[in-house]
Structure formats: structure tokens, C-alpha cells
Amino acid sequence: MQNTITKSPNILKTGFHKQNNSNIIFFQSVEKRLNKIFQDELNSSDSIFKYVSDNAIHKMALFLSGNKTRACSIGIAGETASGKSTITFDIIDTLETFAKEYLIKNLITRINTDDYYYDRSDMVKAAGSFAEFAKHYDLDVPEALELELMKKHIKALQNGETVYLPKYDMSGTAKREDNVTKTEPAKIIISEGLFTLTDKVIDAFDFKIYVDVSCNVQKERFYRRAAERDLGSSADDVYLNAASKAKIHIHPTKEKADIILSGEADREAYKRFIKKVLSLVKELHFSSILMYT
Image 1 (tube, rainbow, N blue to C red):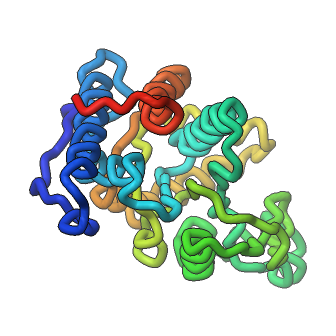
Image 2 (cartoon, rainbow, N blue to C red):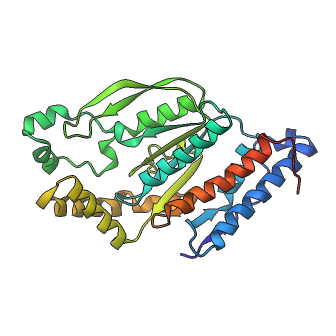
Image 3 (cartoon, rainbow, N blue to C red):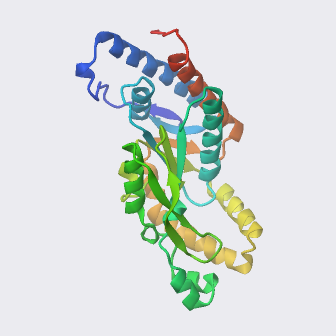
């Protein structure tokens, strides 16, 4: 796929009929500046983007210009070993550094999709081990997670409510404890996971991002991770099941994304791009100079 920004109808939505001319001009300036930042990255030889919709930039301009004042939500999806978690943590780290520099409280919070796996600890005990349990219970389908609860929590945070998130034990017990992690509202809510852009939760996100990676790179990463986790001979079965279920449940969500990232791009390239956007934020909100060019 060629790196592109796709155009959607140029409409001034979200209450622009109530705005005065200076606000509209300011918004248009922000959108124009963002378009250039994204287009420059798309045109670079090692772009982090494979696809960006015009509507995604429009929505970002609405938030950065102050026309949308509620918390924004970002959902990042992709198959296992695509790089989505690494990208998410790099985004969080870069934003938290910015927040510390400018004394911004509650800039970003993360919701871990994996924490919404249903508690199946009784089934693990009955099976005798997690390995035996996993032979008969499929964790690589969206039905294995309580995505409706995740959506409810995201919406509550967007509405400025404090929520108590679940915590799932990934060490092999399949136990989930509810109402464990107290989470305060933040300006940005970010979540990544295999099924983040599936039907039961996708509507919770303002920005829908898919991390794309070649089969060879993804497979190499998977087996390297499998070795680290000492999966041994079961790694082949785990990979084949994950790959087959990804074709059904994960790959189709790529079509729903308004941004597609390259899971093979250099990590520093992601950070550089985020810093370019943050430079615009700094200019807009931490400088007395407002540019309308």
C-alpha cells in the first residue's frame, strides 16, 4: 500500500456554526499545520505511516485547537508481535516527559486490554495446569474478553469519572480481580490489544490505529518471545492458532483503522514524529504567539 492521506468531505463539524471567525481561522490553521507534519512524514523514506485518513487529522485538529474539550481516546490494534505494545509505551513515555516539562497533570492514562480477559481460574484448576486448560479454551478470540466492560470504563473516563479497572494475572492462573486499579480521568486515554478495534469496543475510540507488520518479521518476533517465555514445543501450536484466528478476528479490523502504522519502523522515528506534534502543542498552548498561517 502506498503511503497516503485519504481525503474525506471537507466539513466543519462539532458546533462550528456557533464559532466566531477567529476561532474558525485558528482551527483551520491548526489543521493545516498538522496536515504538513503528517504529509512530511508520509513522504519520508522511512515513514512510520502506511495510511492516514484526512478525517483523523481533522479530528486531531479539533482536539488540539480546543474545539473538542473532553478526553480523547486512542485504540491501537494489531496481531501478536506486531509491535503495538512497544509503540504504545513509546507514546506514553514521550507524552509523560512532555507533561513533566510543562507541569501537566493527568495527561495520559493506559487501559490494558489484556486485563479484560474473563476469569477462568476455576477452569485452570480443574484442568490441572494452564497448558492443559489452553488446549481446550481459546484465548485468541474476542469472546474471551469482556470488551463491553472495557468500553464502559473508557466512556466513564471520557466523562471525567474515576474508575476501578480489573487486573488479569498473566502468569498462568487465568485469574481476574475486578475493581483493583484506581484510575483517574486523563486528557488522553490509550489502549492497545489484539481486539481493540473489534465491534464491541471500537466505538469507544476517537482514533483507531492498526499496527501492520510483515508475516516474516511478525513470525520471527513471535518465536523469539516464545523462547523467552520457555514455550518449548508448544510454540508451534500457539503460533498456528494465533495466526489462524488473526485472519478471522484481527486482520479485518485493519479496514476500520483511520491510521495504519508500520510495525517495522524505527522506534526513534515514532518518538521524533510525536515530538513534532508536541512542538505544535507547545506553540499553541504554551506560547503567547498564535500563528494563523
